[in-house]
Image 1 (cartoon, helix red, strand yellow):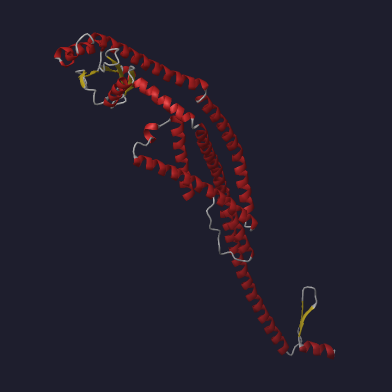
Image 2 (cartoon, rainbow, N blue to C red):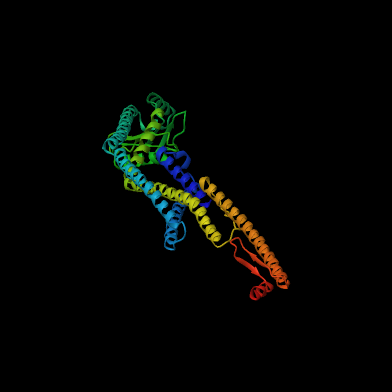
Length: 420
């Protein structure tokens, strides 16, 4: 019963691994917390221990069969032969299935990570990068256009309400999320009325400011903010071409929301693909171990089934052999009490009936022998009585048998014969 339960547990665990590998059930088995990771490791450890236990039970059964065969135990030869046949019959298709599945997996994995698939993933990533570069270049051009229009004003105009109003108009025209002007060691930041994005992209804004001040070249980049579903393209330039003019203009525009999810998906799939590309050997090794475990489970199931069938045959036969030996020694009072099925059950029932009949016939013969013995004793007593009576008679008496031979003769008859 323990072996059956263990086999069912191992089979369910392996089916779960096959389902995870074949159908990619990531939402159900991907660990998101430390507790889930610990649970996943516990299940993996349980699967490994069950695999080792099955292997140990299989080896134990084989060693037990060898010891029984060497000890000439009744039924051991038949049991070992049946198990050998079962393992042999299951080993050939299991090995064929193993090598076929191994070759199919190798070819499939090579195709999954082949040059066409790699080229498609890399091209998708390149298209994404090109689109971002285009957005950054366009935003840099917008920044130059706004800087040219703002450079007409004097520096004192940067703190006026008119300047902020003009900057807001430019932001609305180009659909900008943020505009920052750095002048006279002060920062004037104007944001869109729809969303305050400055806290989300503060680091990139600081990097753009530092780069444009120190290097002098235009800065372009992007920031995902606090959410991967919101990407901001950032560009920063000097307001004028003079190296002595430290005025800067930094713009931020949100990437089109309908493309943000696709861009994030492309990036994720690109990273996953190249991550798996570096683990091809490990993936193949995992699949080989999984196929080996399934093959071993098939062989173990075949051997266990053969042992079960052999036990159902050899145990009744061994019980019948022992009962036959007892009957040969005159013990008819011990019937065969063993669980058997089909024809063996009928054979056990017939043997018990035969033993019961033999016991009954023996009792009958014993009673007949006792009756015969008592009859013989009575006849002997009567014969001795008649002989005594004949000896006491004075008249000679001679009795003959069926062949006219002398059966008995008394003393008086002998005297008469001698006197005559």
